[in-house]
Amino acid sequence: MDIYDRAKESADDYLKAIFILSQDNTKPVRVTDIARLMGFSKASVSRAVRNLLCDGRITLTPNKRVVLTPKGLDEAKGVYEKNKFFKNILVDAGVDDKTANDEACRMEHALCTDSFEKLRRLFNGTKQEPCE
Image (cartoon, rainbow, N blue to C red):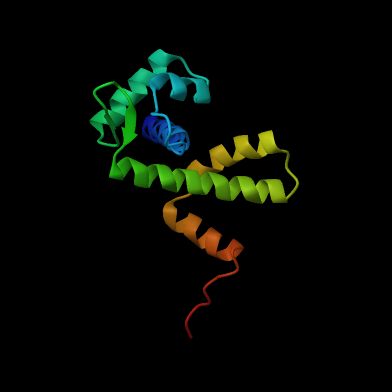
């Protein structure tokens, strides 16, 4: 895995964390919330937030709250959806919750969107038959 792939995975993980935290609309997302959820230092999260800000995936409010942009929200939803899909399959197969969570996190990065959509259709019973 090259440095670009690791950076993409890291950005995806941060976007997913921000998305999860933003689901509770009653409180704004702070760097400390992200650090706590991910188990990283505030300094590491601050660097990642700066990168996401430069990439146009998040904005910061005047009081330093993190908000996903439409671009960031779209990417975050995609990563979150992949994660939940793989975790559910693993749990349904009998894998314990922690292992399923850890492995789903790795699996969410392994497939392109097209491959994921095909797998999702297959598992949802909507496999498309080839045209004759």
